[in-house]
Amino acid sequence: MLAVFAFPILGLLTLWLLSRWTTIGKLPVYVTVTLLVSFFIPISTVALVPFDLVDDETLDNHKRLIMWRVIYWLSFLLMWLVLPLMQAYVESGYYNPWQKLKDASKNCLKSQLIILFCGAIGGIYMSVTAGLSFTSLKGLCIALSHSYGLLLVIWMLGHSAVSIPRSMLFNSVGSNLHDLYCHATHYYDAYRDAQSNYDDVVAKIMALEAIKTEKYAKWIDSLIADISSQDIGSGFGVGGRAGSSGNLSTGASAGASGASGATGASGRAQPRDLTPTNISDLGRRLYRDQSRLLRSRADWESLLAKVEYFEQLQSGTTHTRIAKIRPYLYMVGGLFLSCLSVIVIWSEIVSGTKLSLIDIIIRHVAKAFKVLFAALFLGYMCFLVNSALTSMRIFNLYAIVPKHTDSSSLIFFAAYALRLTVPLSYNFLMLTSTQETVFQEFLGKFINLTALGKYFNQVLPRLVIVPVLMTLFNVYDLVKDYLGFGFGLDYFGDDENEVVSAEPEGRDLVRRALQGFAAFQQPEVVEEQENTGLLSVVKGWFA
Image (cartoon, rainbow, N blue to C red; front, side, top):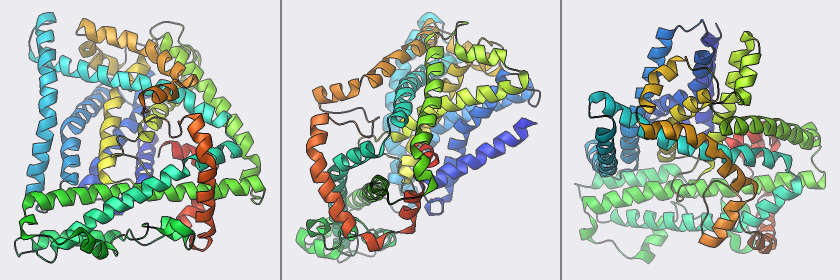
């Protein structure tokens, strides 16, 4: 009976998360439907795995087997074919749908050839160890995909199991303000750079309007219409917040309306510029720079809103009930998540043995609560992995920003969420002593088909101690200082000397921006300020 309510509730949760990350109404229908399916599959496993684990009578073995087959092969199809093709299609700068599809197919083919090359190497290994057959090739695909996904799962799990509880236990108004001040200059510079790049590509597109021919008129007009529809120059960006506050208004509010002025500076376009390749490159750049500008503007506005909120808390001007009990909520939440993290980490280290705490708890609770405890632990593991995944910014190309995430980033993270779903689910089952689930029967024989797959499945979970220790002792910062780049997992992970030297400049920048912006606050930002409690923090981990 519980399954009847569980899956619809998880479906509503999927819709809510997607609506939090982006404006659903602005997405094409085919993108919206695909994303809903892609995100629902990982979320649905939080219910399906516990039902499979405790042999719930609501779903018999045949139904569970069908569901696991559909989930696995649909995930496989989505992450290796549909989503990469759709992402390339969305990023394509061509106007005609058929041309966009051809361009996307060509770009996807390049990456698929690399995968086929790796698969050929794996095929040679398979022919030596198990012989070549359809079953062995299918097992090879499953084992390779599982091993790669499991490695990512263990690394992200170990990182978040330490960083999230620690961020709550050692959370204070002063430390939050310190971090925000230290990174204000970086956020502001990123916003200005993004605005400059966007103005440059807009200027080049606007310059084409004067020389457009009938052949390319609709194409160029569609790009100009896209620029006008975004209205990026309006609102309360850096310049809007700054108002008359000195240099903060420099180059920040140009947007689409200022593009024509920039056109003259960049010189006139020549007829030779009217080529499909050139226009498609401009279209691709427009999409990329638009998305980057929206992300950087949202980051800057969010930072200012948070600074304003925490300054009110520090000065005591906020007298809401949530502000008074906020430290206690964080402490209780941090202790609870710390206990869950200890249980998960220990169970990973001793996976496959009777010392697993998850196995002990599930075995000794009443049958009526087995599903709930299994869902709690698996849900927390999914939460840890996906919080690490969605907090990553891949080469500043893909990022999750509340209400401002572009289609390409959503598709990218949906593909990786699918890639991690099956390894995470199977890994959770390995933390228990139950070996008779439908999922293990369906997938285990392929994972354990070769000695390498079986070895990876047994050894990798125990390596969770590596990212745990690296996060616990801030090894990421040491490596970043030595190599000059970071891992993309920590939002604030700069060198302490750099942070301290940047704080006064950042504080001055933020205060000048806030002084010039008190009259321009939008309802969305005010709402975020008023709800910066424990619930909003939990929501923010998914963003």
